[in-house]
Image (tube, rainbow, N blue to C red):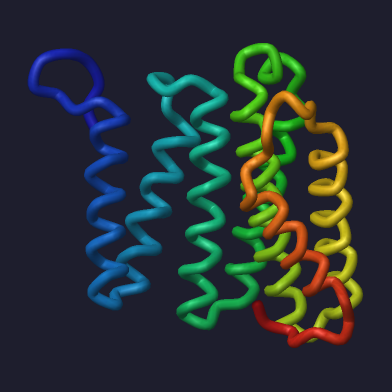
Length: 183
C-alpha cells in the first residue's frame, strides 16, 4: 500500500482492487481466497487515515457481514458468529454516535437501521444453526423491536423502503419458535 500523490495508490483504490479480487475468488468458489482478500480490506479500513470515520465504520460493518457469510460457507461457525457479532456492534456504534446523526440524512439512517437488522437476522440464524435457540430468539427479537421502532418513528412525509417491512417480517418469523432454524 502506498500513500500520496502521483503513481501511488490510495486506500480507496487498493480497497476497490481487493473487492474485485474477493468477488472473483468467490465466483470461482475459492471461499478461502475471498475471505483473505476481505480480511485485507478490513485491515485497510481499520487503519486508514484517508477515509472518513463514518464511511470506515459503515464499510467495516458491511464487510464483516460478508466475511461472516464466507466463514459460514466454509463451515467455520465460530468465525461466522464472531464476524456477524462484530458487524452488529459496528452498525450499533454508527446509530449510537450522535455526531453522525447530524452529518447524514434521515434516509441514510434508515439504511443503517436496515443493515443492522440484516446483520441481526444473520446472527440469529447462525445461533439457530448452532442449536442455541435462546440466543437466537433474543437476537431476532432485538431485530423485530428495532425495526418496529423505526417503522413507528418514521415521519409520514418520508416513506420507508419496503425492504424494512419485509426484513421485520422475516425476523419475526425466525423469532417464532415454530419456524425452521435456518434462513
